[in-house]
Length: 123
Image (cartoon, rainbow, N blue to C red):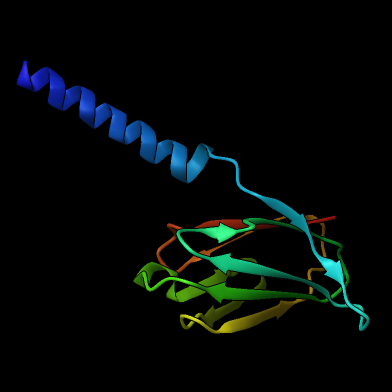
């Protein structure tokens, strides 16, 4: 009986991990355009990115302001591989990350360990 309980518990834990990291739907926002023409939005880092999906237009500069509200070592850095940009995110500080997407598409960003994920949808 113990073996059955351990196996069922293990499968439930695996299902929870798969749902949390790959299947759960996050929040989406469209970046606001500032007076200077920069597309800007604020992202809270606390157990994930919120919002974790940002919509922007191609050809316009983007400024994502990360506000890290946790001390987990996983969230110390955000990496945008497609744009060759990364930034340290000290706890309690707002850190702007800027880039200009030129091509429409979906571009992922993540913590340095790849556990926290988000994406920028460029149209």
